Image (cartoon, rainbow, N blue to C red; front, top):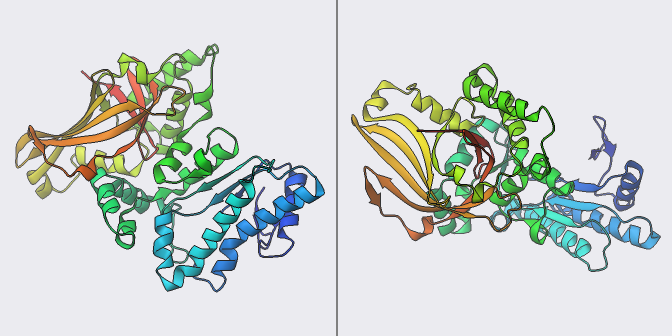
Length: 414
């Protein structure tokens, strides 16, 4: 059920700035049997920025108080899309954005106060606090929007360990420019997972890009228990053959769908955090990769770059080596630098994530860079951790999801 101010395009009319909006929201919830309310309402660079951005909190409080007075069924779970504290601090320092920031802040305060009361009988609340959100197919200035293509490249670049460390070390007004954005699809999946109860919302907030991406990465198939029904083993083998030998015959979207289906068919007793099968060499299958960053890497490895660049730096291959009982990773990028072959190696360590019911989630921590056999010095601020999930594992193949949330198809190497 969707609402809009004017009720166009098949939506239900609901003007949050109207005094009766709280009562109207309760009526919609009861008539449509709604079990979660998601507020993505917002405006920027308008005369009514404060009124519109604070309306979600005011209406949520009014709806909650209305149900308590009438003793009707309590309103359902409330999910609000806010923004990170760092973004808000920067907005407060810019005169044109002060009303926007204060409105968002007021909504968050009211949602926390209303649904955080010990006497509340609702389904709870969750506030998502992203930095910047990108997505869609078009560029826009007001409201600011980056399309998927350029946004994905920026996310991959700004998500690197050194850039993250640089962002953290700078004052808010400078550091926020180096914060990695998050894809709108990841935000939407995280909201659905919280709303349906597939994902918990610690402390009622998803405070970082990594929190949002990990919430989005949870899939219903990962919760399945018991033996795999007849025919699923055959389907799993069919998917593996298709992805490993015929991926170029399909679109990135079709490959993505097959990867997610394979994840749902993973062997029930497989726990990668405890399984020695994870150790060894794993080669990336770039033909399957659905995201922009790995597509760019594929172009480099296939020799599609300019000839003058290949004479200086020529990419030869990339693979992952996992060892020491699933506790270390070497990401090896083989290159030819000025005609001489050498390796650039990223060293990280692995440890099981604190919340890890399926044994698939790790914390990956940066441990250093090696070039041509020499360990390079790096600042301590680079020693950061992020989530890494191995959502599928058997003797031949694995599926890994990094901080970007996209699946990577891995083939066991020699």
